Length: 357
Image (cartoon, rainbow, N blue to C red; front, side, top):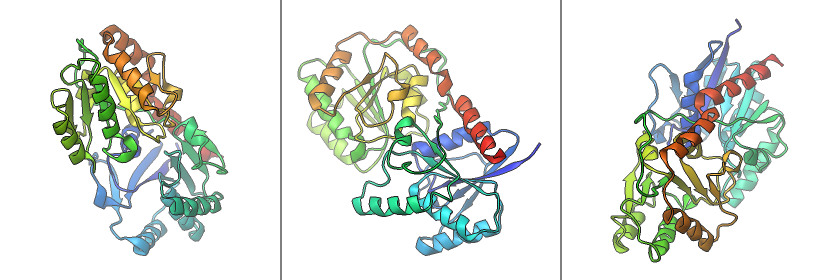
């Protein structure tokens, strides 16, 4: 059996879906592959990883970071290098171009966003550089159809959609019966996720409807945490909203909820959507770009970012009986294909086919 080596490049093992999906997928690595992680921003690490995974860290910054990466690659050999950000795609394309003696090297760009950069000037610069690097990128793995059709993948060759799926650590075997709908928000507390906007919508609904204890649970951390705490305090939402903070294992919160809420302005296809479906939850989501292709009849995708529309959906859900355990079990069964194990098979099959070409 031919053995292949993979270098998984990460810009820090942060709490984002890209890194969590990678670590979950690597648990299902076929025997014909071996892998190593190259961490080019270890200073922002937040996730733990298995001690069995080899990892090389680059702690330099700026030009010294690029030179350290180039030196590392010149002394190593990998059949496949997988990158996850536009900057790393550009950086490693340049390395591949310089290291012409590394024949047979396959560069894979795992595209996660439906934008290149949120900064206008940087967006233009990265877009131009990325297009100039397209001859060095052998395969683009888009995490959703939306990402495939978006600006990150435009004019790049050999673009394939592979859903990354998710893996939740077991918390309890039986789905609990809920007396009332329970909403769950999981993610970074940042502007693009709009957690404060969500609290505003919930407060408005609460003026027309008596909200139950712990109606909404917010799991995550970020720069808006203090502002959220103040909002909850000022408007008397302590009994209605639970602000949990960051948790690496979120299984118990998915088990206790009935609906996942996403009010982002922009998404690729959030890992939390897979986690929600595998837990049997329904999803309420703004039309942020990601998710439609995995939604079922139990989900609520809004047609706009209109506040009134969002509040109407929340009112409808919170004034109705919660889904039964049987309903949730049905969603779980229909979502089995979203497990990391199943999605990893497709991912590594695609890599094997690319290497055989």
